[in-house]
Length: 184
Picture 1 (cartoon, rainbow, N blue to C red):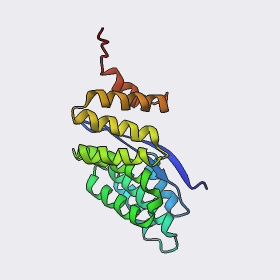
Picture 2 (spheres, one colour):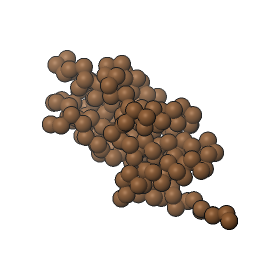
Picture 3 (tube, helix red, strand yellow):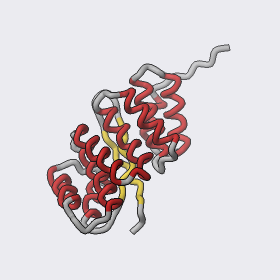
């Protein structure tokens, strides 16, 4: 199957939503972990499937890195943000060429942990290094900026995310919370 596949994973937090956006598909058995990440499963079975995939000795380092990203996304869905960050760290060491998309995911986990400055750094890295999940990185940057009190920057990031992916409801809902007043 293809090397990468975007899967939209909606993750809701009480105060600040974040979006884990890039999952990777590899060969069996990692495909089962990918499927869990793609549908935002965060239950014990999804974690078990991903753990079993990671224990597979036959997969290449790149597929193992992609599977760690998938398990990280599953862990975000399970609200286990610290372990998600560990998976993203491991994936970064195995496949540094995936760093932009890994950082877009890292931003989502960091937002859920309330580490907004770090999330902003991760989202900016993803954008500067041409993450495939550009709209999601823009949205996560918007959430981080809003939490840091930069409403103008947050609005711009949400607007850019909505322009990048026009039918995506998260940035549109975020934009609806803003009132733009033009001063003469």
